[in-house]
View 1 (cartoon, one colour):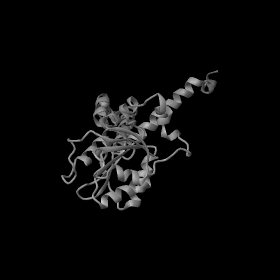
View 2 (view 1 turned 90 degrees about the horizontal axis):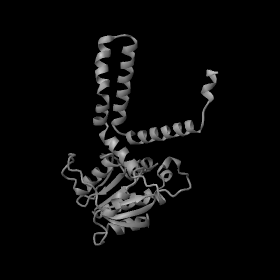
View 3 (view 1 turned 135 degrees about the vertical axis):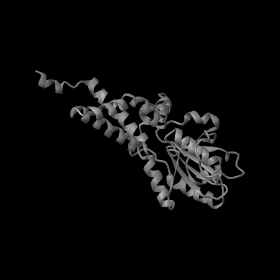
Length: 260
């Protein structure tokens, strides 16, 4: 009768597998495109070597790897501290009421009929503002809910268009200070105050807007666009790093890929 136990798959088992799949998906989203994925692969290799030395009874090597594995949890916390912080923020900022229902945050479950962010308008506005050296800081929400930042600025509900973005950051506009947060083709908030990163060393030519962009993209999975008021240069940041691009088309493709 034991051979039939494999088929004894109930609703609880299905939920268990589904939740594990969601967990693995979010872990993949957190480490994708970062050095953490290489570190994770390295840890898997060390684990396999540890098991192999035990199986082959290579006692000396096994003792070395066994000592490493015993402190592995602490090492994981230290090495993956930014990713763990992002994951906990993602879980803690998930709102289970209203618009922020749990499944609405799982973007891989969204259908193709839902409104997508008008990236073309955003990039066009950035380059237009860059030509006039109009400073701007735009944060694009992904999986992590950024509603906890809205209280630092002015809550909005404006459809994204190129003229809207340009008018917000117009130098005489009362809304031009701080950042704007965009999600699902909607400007959620303006004049948002972002956490500034003072620990990371970035070139002196970059100012507070760039440090704020580094801070928010390092602490969450959001991506950010910055237009320098001094040079007019457009910068794209992800995971606390400056992402290089050659032209507007390449920038468009980068953002669209990251927002999927």
